[in-house]
Length: 78
Image 1 (tube, rainbow, N blue to C red):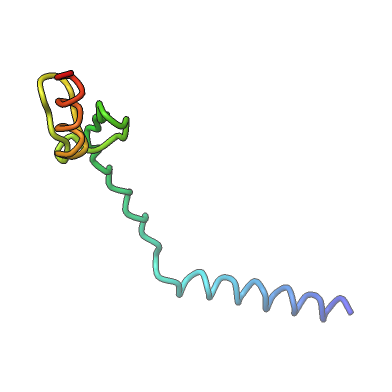
Image 2: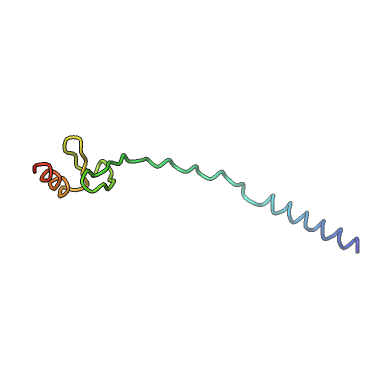
């Protein structure tokens, strides 16, 4: 029985060493790229946050759409 266990362990060790030697070397995974953040602004009319590049500015206020800009101008005119 001891001889059988010896041969099983020896075979497993040989198999493990063979697999380790024949596997291609693992390269480090590429580092995740930093995603660029986009400045966000809050619409003065509805409060929705939109990217600054898509927003409309009137004085110091930002708006998500032309309709909200016009609506806020009309409300301030009263």
